Length: 341
Image (cartoon, rainbow, N blue to C red; front, side, top):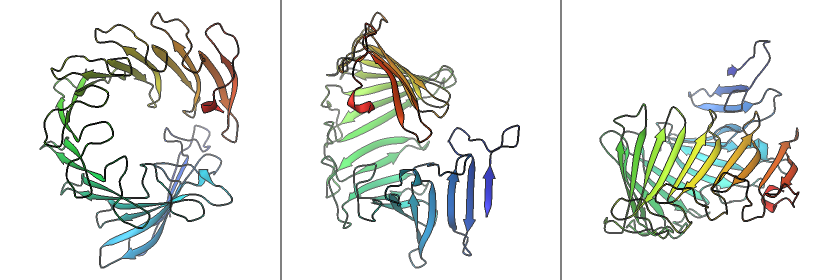
């Protein structure tokens, strides 16, 4: 078995930013991974990339594929954990995923379907995604049966197209059938620029359900600030139905969103549909959210649509969130909203 253990200055197990302190792999005689699992500093399972343990289940030598059972043991219920059967091709790429609950019954996975199949380009990039039901038949997910993806010569995504059961372009739930991507990385050390343009079934520009014709995205790597701006048919800032044209957000060094703010088409702070112009979030050492504060366009405490202006809490040793304070804009204690219970 090959092991990776992370130690602090006292030679004690300590976890990294992905949350694990130990990573262990055993190989079968044919060179495939037979067992892989992650643990924290106490030896308890830790989910990384959606699983805490992978076990080799079967090998199909004729098809040059193999299947592994991927479990998330942090979600154990009644002595068992939900799992995914992941089938890999000869290049170790996942070509099929089937989702099961802790009782071994088919269940809906994180993408909303019972099963997902993938195809790849010669460069190893996903070119086709198809959704299936529990019996392996084509199935619609929010009105579409899958997605086709093309890439430019640099390996960046060029287009994404949602398709029907016959593989033909069809509108998704957001109102467009495809997205064309463009990039400007000429000054990427300072700012990265990305563009998305919505397309109809004929590949022509179209308007989404929220009223926008596309999105302009900026990322400032030094400050870790992202900016998402919706645009109209002429490429100008456009306020969508949710009440704002631009969303800005800042991430900490672990990728957690610590601040977000909403702005109108001329760049002035504005309330979003949730009732606030900006939000501040706090996290514990494990990257779990433990506080939020909602602010108006004058940067003063305000209530969101739940009637809450902020809350604080902590996690128990069992990983349960405990709310210690939940208050309105006048600092009066209010009931904890259902989403935090």
